[in-house]
Image (tube, rainbow, N blue to C red; front, side, top):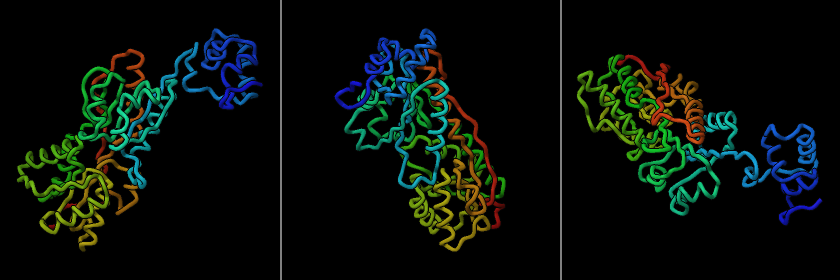
Length: 344
């Protein structure tokens, strides 16, 4: 058996072994019906016997191309209490499998983006489409993604134009409903631990917070909001600073459950009880949320559904089918043990 210079068995080797063309091997492996069952059986037996693994660049030779769709994220960290990205990976992988697409996970950061442009990355990885999450408005890829002709579904990132689809929930409405729930418990001094200044979703969740207060004719205190960067430790520090300056606050709306955990830790260290002294409401409903601090009251998102929706949107764009510019997915307010009626 002759192998390539790299030592790997090639599609040419399989074709030679069976006595058919490279095109026939490729079409058999890609499930085309015009290859006889007898020939297909011989090819599959040779593939197994020779330990042949199709090369990504060779899959489309003379056969049906297999599109590759990547989840591009900057949100994977060494510690990931969130679990949100995993949910999107799960949903996107399921959708890629259903549509017969290859799936790839790509993790990026500012340094990587400065070294390799978005278009160069897509060409290097042979990507047909991308589901994007975690980009900030200041990231190098932000404008590049917006201006590209590569089909993209963007999760919680606003975009417009051809081959673009936004996957999101109504963050303004969800945040407004969450703060209205706190107001319904009698809270009027409500603080907010927000995400990042450069994250569009943070602006939307702050808008919902403001709308709930103004609709209830509760004065808006600009100093009641702090940025926790979607990080537990930062939220811990910012909560202490906020409550030390404004001890009158009786409830906190946090723009993520991870920050809600940091906020609760800070309140306990200050000798305050949750929810007896200060109620805390989070966002996302991460897996751990129902197990800690009597269960965190939160706004539930569905990351698996987001991944599925992103994958379906990209696949439909690749097939030339029309796709809505924005898909809003459902959310749900989940009441648990970190909120209670205002006691002061």
